[in-house]
Length: 313
Image (cartoon, rainbow, N blue to C red; front, side, top):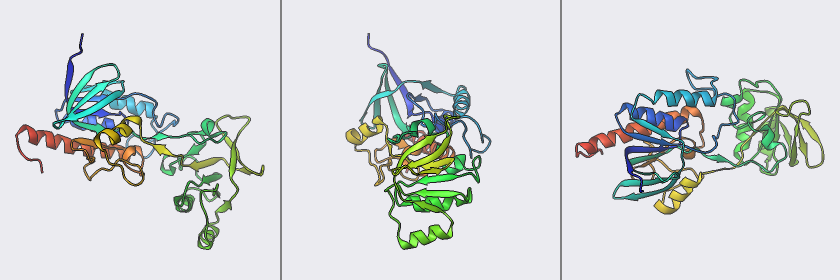
């Protein structure tokens, strides 16, 4: 027997900070919303979230639980299911979920985040989120003035190494074959008292007494450089649904591979919005939540004006 088709004002894919924020504001705007989410959480390895006013230090799991609980009073449905396919006909989105459910919606928000691709480096997976980090705003306060390392992934790593001096004066920059330093670069690092190691990293030495602690960075020649924490930026990619929409709908990405959006988070596809880490290199829970709210404001405005048969500008 064929399942009935769900009719919604907005479908949101992803229930991280961006998705939950958008769902809350759309719910308060009296819109019928479906939030679909499945798969591993990008911040699953993190024990705490920081820098989110009123929620500093909360665990990601608790944050999500509170967000979902607060949606219960609104016309927001949450389903832990993947979106299998999306088509757009005459301005309406037609979705099929992996459980076979079919959904139609006038607007759609991608809040899927990104996928971090683990490096093929011994010790990386064991230490990720424990002693290996990406964001000093998320973890810097807790590990201030400790022995830090920065593993370069490109030219931006030079500025990053100089920037994080604000948290720790004990810094080593591992160029790791990803960063060529000019004489000017070397002088800037020397003045900042940042040690430079140009040999490639072979492995990360996990402490024998604590499997979640970094003991040293081992280089190709066997040298071990004692470090307690590393900041490292592994490659990121869009989730498969976003990659599919690039192919089927011509969803535009920018030169860095992020989904291109305007000031109100609308993508190149009319009616399709995106918010959160998949749109920007400036990645953080508070930033994503703000972007989710912005997309909700715009979608709600458009839907209200469409109901009146008026132009929303």
